[in-house]
View 1: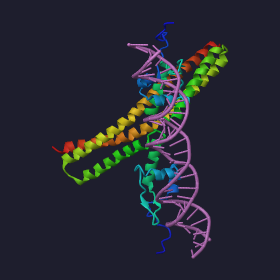
View 2: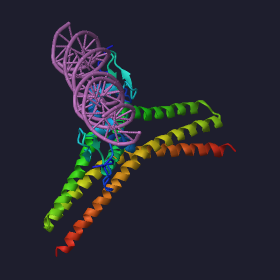
View 3: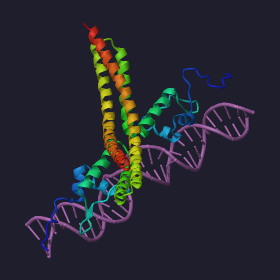
View 4: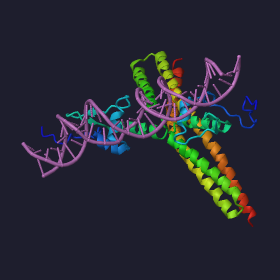
Length: 155
Length: 155
DNA sequence: CTCAACCTTACCGTTTACGTGAAAGTTAGG
DNA sequence: CCTAACTTTCACGTAAACGGTAAGGTTGAG
């Protein structure tokens, strides 16, 4: 048992929490904290119980960070979005577990509804933000026009 | 001095905090709290120091609530946006205080930059949200296509 | 003038999303 | 095997954004 390096099986490179945090731009504290509301669980634990994350976890963390920073979602809301995603994946599994076309249609329909709910949530936020952009843009254009006026009358 | 009702001068109707809060859908606690970071100050105070708000204040509160609820901005960020707005208005005043075309152009340009900064901030958020919508939409479409497949092969 | 309803400031409590150690165990190079 | 660096689980601290309540002043209809 002279297995010094964990011998990365090539497809599953696992990193510890500090490297993970650095990689996605979070603190180790935040990464650990995200386990409480169930936002993510490390792909594995080392012999000595160290958290080990894989590439899927990193993507998930980037996704969470995006929602938090850019969209301003609370962790509870993010948890909801991720839960919906998980539900869809469970539906995916159930889909392959049956061959009954009617049952399959039902599962797929459920998924579509879930997607639509999520899109609705996001679109509502976008709508509000867009309104603000439009209003600001209108004022900007008006101001630019005033500048043009001054330019033309200065001759 | 049989002046019972404060005789609303028609243009400046002032309301107290409870009515104000109800009107915009906030609690009195929040409305008071917004004074701390300097988000708004009541238009006036009554003889006995009651806060009195005018229509401008109500609009401002609705604006704040929108940013908070829909856009998920922190109060500090909202304060920044409102400060920019205030700066633009000061520029507006300065604009009318001078007749020098060069100075006027400078002030207007400053305003445009301020508008653009705000638009940038909002667009960044929208962009991130839109990406999520697109991804979700793509999955939805794919799922709908799968349902159609099932439908066509059931005959 | 009276009194219920409303308001004031002040202060303590709460939730969220972490920051910051403390005390102890784990890893990995030399 | 030793040790520095990293990690673990508590556990307490903090800033933001309020909620709630106490103690007392203000308003305005009757």
